[in-house]
Image 1: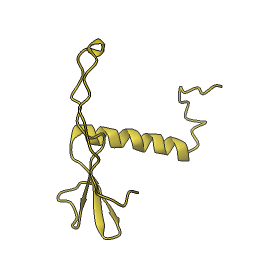
Image 2: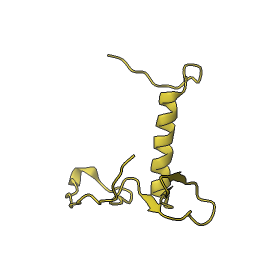
Image 3: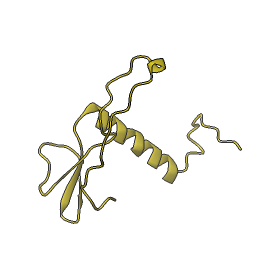
Image 4: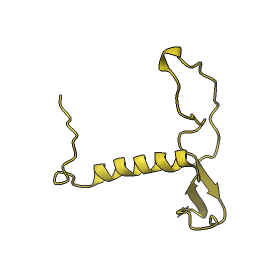
Length: 90
């Protein structure tokens, strides 16, 4: 887990005209809100070293967290019986 709240510098990248139109593209891939108090409502959070960590409440952030969660679960769970259509070959 990161120990710093320092923001990375951002810069504009010109869109390649071959790409066509795209969905909204936020500046951050996954925003994590850090606060000294618990989040309002029923938002899930993690308490770590006296700080509360919550995934930002936007569709983009929630989806990114869900994808990461699923990837993590596949790395720590025996999925041989699940029948995932994934093939890794060399």
